[in-house]
Image: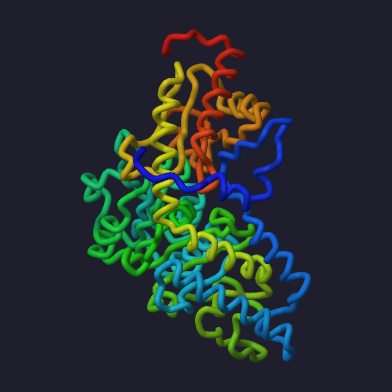
Length: 417
């Protein structure tokens, strides 16, 4: 195997839901790319906040509020360290990666772009890293251009100069593809974007949960994440931004907590990070996110990545033996994360997903919020099995056995189609 497996059996004991059953079968959870499961300590931290510490932050002149504020602010500092950001004030809490990317689109792009300016994305992007830029282009007269892809679903850096120009103002790419698992060489792309004077935006929804990240080493201008893909609660995300850019941007939302002063006809925004955190946030979720970050740090992101690479190597080998299967993405494990997308010849992805569900195997079936790529491939979608630190080779085996049931039901021939 390409990497060393974690003690995933022991890790599973920390995740209550993984001991449950689905349709009377032991749960085989292979949909962490959509949302990861939560360890017991994260669930308990969420409950503990509401049971023992519930108060609004930055406002109350009493002990509970001070304690809640301290927990919230300490999470920001922990997350900054986790992402390699030396200045915690450059880490903005949002609801998710989608909101983080929209913040950049609304507060920077819609105020800075001019007609004819270019936004560089790709057909492999999640809709969250496409639609906000489409909206910004429509509003400003800017133009979307697309990085060419290789046949194995990687950014074709040899052709980057075909689409990168002096008119390029934004380059927005994914650290890791949610649809096919490609890990991209984003540092090289960022360097070339900056040479053209463009800002460099990274969709890190899949990146930060699977790989150690250092935003300052990547030299990105923005890096967006979601807690729920990193063992944390839903409704919490974050945006790292370069201070020099954040300070020039207009607030995304107006209201309480994002102001320094207000008169009857004007206001002055608060300094970073509060400038972009209007209203009462998901305090309990942020507090529980700190515990998730601690858990990931204790296991080690490098160890998690090695574990996933071992599973992907085994998974590609075993799934490759299934007659009629079509695998998507690169075979180069140096550029692959814990996702395997596939199809069975002649069987709709939703039918595969439904039959796997009967066997207790939870996968994602569809276009994975990546319609342009699916259309490029001439398909409606794929089946996606995504792995994390609590999965093991036995989960791959369960997936392969369940696919044999699909083949039996559809009376597929034994020979490869």
